[in-house]
Image (cartoon, rainbow, N blue to C red):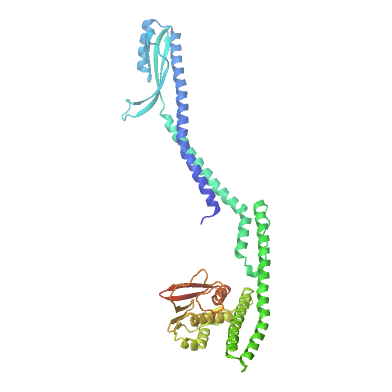
Length: 429
């Protein structure tokens, strides 16, 4: 991912670079054309000036021929040739390449040539003049170098200005973004955004503020309803269960009535467990387990494993432990015990008879695994009331509670399936 500034700056620089590269041949063509036009005017001026000079001398025919012959010998790049009247031609301009023969290392140079008919002593002469135009290449090179220099200067200036302006213009946006990153819906706090003199950012802040206030209100109402409903249901559920226990002890019940009452009792027990777990989730989300202490995790694990050992033996589950002694972590004791109990319940409930389970504890990790036949769906594994197996005795909240505890304790929880083992890994941060 790239910042917005680089997203906008890079295309701009590419565009300017393309324009620069395209402009160099255009510069060459324009300057060369102008140069040739100026040289053509220069050559015409030389031809007319030469004719004017010879005419002012008023030379005789013999003197004129000698002067023209001398002119052709000593004047480089020009030639005066007498032509008959019936060979009159229009002015001709063209470019030619010739070698310098008067240098040790001959060079090929370009010349702008003009063939023009002039009149000396009222007789036609073909005047040919050649002017070197090689300097245009040097001019183009200088122009290109200057263009590149100013291009680099503009680019560096724009980058500098973009960064300076970005720091001031995008400051309110970054401030809003940082506040959104630290916002936690569980805290039920609203965000106060800094006012901005930029219309778009101010509208964004107002819209976000309204959205957050609405979400906080809805979340608070839902959470209060869940907490109140779970709390208020405890008393009637306890009364109903107590009455059922009394009913089940009645010797006058028929066998059919006893089975019906037993089914009601199981359903009621499960409802009470769901209600208790929902209340626990509400308390975790309400930060009612905020106190933290140093926990001797190895001791807590041993104590809970000892409680569940009878259940492991009943299903012939082979439990292997690698628990390092003296492992101490920071956390809430009630939540840590709840997390371990839920993991152990899952092992008992979802591991087949004669299966295998492993528990490993180090200073950085708690890894709990049990044998299985197929991987679980990671997308729904930690969602409430999602079922990882066909067992209907569970509440469907065990792994959701584990996930919520890890979030609350700032522990990292991961799941993967490897070599026919379900592996849950918790990293203590």
